[in-house]
Image (cartoon, rainbow, N blue to C red; front, side, top):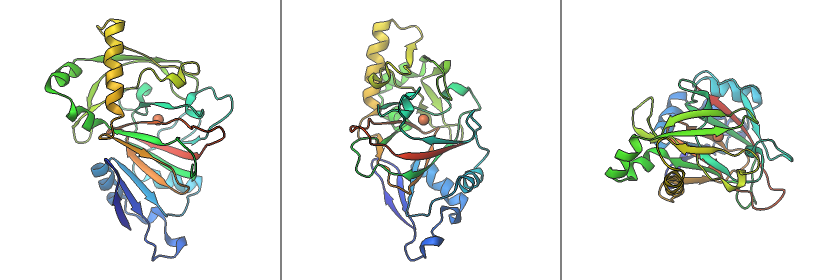
Length: 268
Ligand SMILES: [Fe+2]
């Protein structure tokens, strides 16, 4: 294997090209090595490895912990669909969020594991976006930090796919493994989602006007080049993200008909 640093964070791991293709399997990479890479880099992409069957993907994921069961099972197929009930299956952009937000404490996945069965090689847009949630915190001023730590946000979205409901969550949390502070936030004002499956966000104790100006400023901070890695999928990519350390979303597919096919597994 060899490694390429991604920008502004993340790591790309290339399969060893001296091995015969059938031997280039992600299953032969030691679990502890993968965990250390994810802990250090937050997002790790594996490229040049052979694809895994659904069962093999499940077995690969299980070595890191138990799989989070959803009502569809434990592997989610992410494809753009006509007349989708939830915007994660549309071409519009997906707001930044962390997975498992609506499930409550103790049910938040530690890892998101993706396999890309079909990439978006020539598509404009459609990148999966990752924001380093600790870096957003570290970049904030002392005054902002004091303010942020006191805030609780309310989120409301109708359950049209596998997630939804009403939750209240502190804006600032701590990573459950190493304790670093991380921003936990579901991005408000996603214009692509206004008619399909909108998310209403409010801040305890704020007027509607104060809430909107605060949230729009926070949105801008998530998309700064200094904190956001944009992943353009290639067929065959595997990607493992530390769900407690990052927020993720997706940019809009700019051309009709563009899509990609991902499989995703959550490890608790
Ligand atoms: Fe997600």
